[in-house]
Image (cartoon, rainbow, N blue to C red; front, side, top):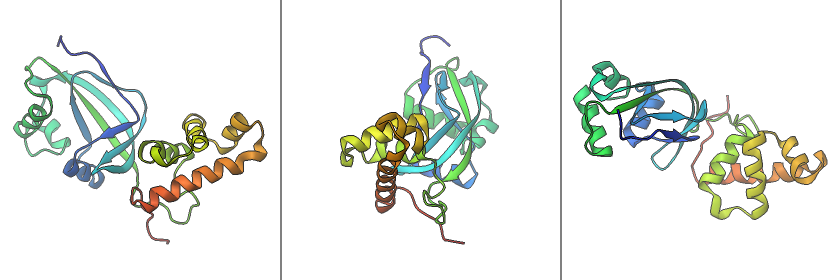
Length: 199
């Protein structure tokens, strides 16, 4: 198991097209990565097809050797067989040995980003979610002030706290709301997130 350093997984997890769809449909519940991978956060955003797809919770992390992978591991990862899984790992990582470690990260989708709550002013998203998505996909369009507001929201997840931290007064929260609303509208306009039907 030597030779591969521990990697850390951030807030954003990229999953290729068809496998991302399987995750959303419940036909995939894990992502397998070569090496020892440690998620930094319990809640992550899944991306695929060039856009954000879902908020998910990391519900389990297991490390085993390549040689210990099973047909069930392959099936839970959205593959038809263990051989298909190993072939996919080779395409991504190149050669590896049976003794190399793999990390199985178990995910549970909490919220799809293409079926958001149209009746909620922020579509059922937390301020920090909107901020993270905007900073990832809209960075070029953000003013300096908007970027500063959104960066702070990723830490506080609170419109009030960010208003106090950046402007010294809760009375200035309209500035935070304005930046958040503009970011949300632009994410919607670009089709990066979608609201479901009103019930």
